[in-house]
Image 1 (cartoon, rainbow, N blue to C red):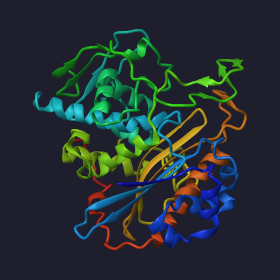
Image 2: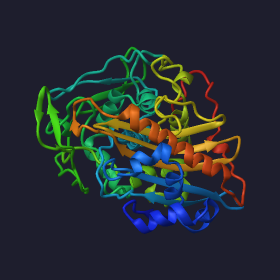
Image 3: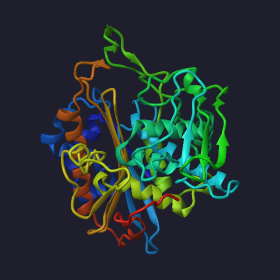
Length: 433
């Protein structure tokens, strides 16, 4: 895979991008991102005038098929340094979901009858841990790993992620990530519950059952504690903003992210590529998943909230592009006809992130696009005053649209076969692997 990097601070690159090369030449000889961005000052001008202030990072990967249909990848970067920190928010849920399905797949070899739909009971064994007996969003009224994966991917549910974190365990999550070659990624806490040490090291006891009455246990997992050293935060600029809120108190210091999760943009796109195109990487870099697991992930990575039966979502609160920032703007715009987006988004502390694979079945177009932007004009974190609606969502929507339009006119030597990703979203009933 070839990678072309653009540093937005370079005046030479800016001159070339804006004045010298047409799009068809960029497609063959350089990075098209600078030209695409600078060609539309109406939508991108404010951010491009000071990309460092917005901590802007973009990864755009073209996919070209050969005569046998094998995909080949060429990646272009705009300021996407793996060392520049941003808070990954809910994007960490994608590797957690994949690792949960992989762990379950391994357990199934030892536990007959265990599936992703098996009823699950979660108990507590440490301070601030909470129990789960029922899940009203499920058709069975019971929690399950499959249901948690659905909710994580459909609407980025935080509690669902926390339960997957507890099932896999902090130590196993990070050991597996290292084994997959994700050297900078670390998942070390739950989300939206103030999780910190030592509680983040402790995970709940839980049990799977053969029946919804929870009388026939299939597998019991005791509580666990991670005694290992946590992975170091291999990142720069981890203190963000000018001030932050601690409850009602304003602290005149940047917010310190040194105890938070990390998931750099290149590794985010790597995870998505490994899940969508596992044959494109070595076996040791793949998640330990079966074909049914992949289909399950594809279904809920790309499903619209209104297409889900259980959980069921109100379209007034969850429009089609609620969890589609690129192209959709987080509900600002519909997706183009015939397009499905397989993605995972994140939103917190002024950061907006989307890591997406876009498939246009009508025109045979496919590409990968990941981006992060920081929108916090007042420089205060934890005050809930961020510029998501006025700057962040519109920028990501327009960025997705610009790359999509470019891909529509980009020539391809061989046709694109997207049959793997053409799914039936009208199938009723349980579909967990």
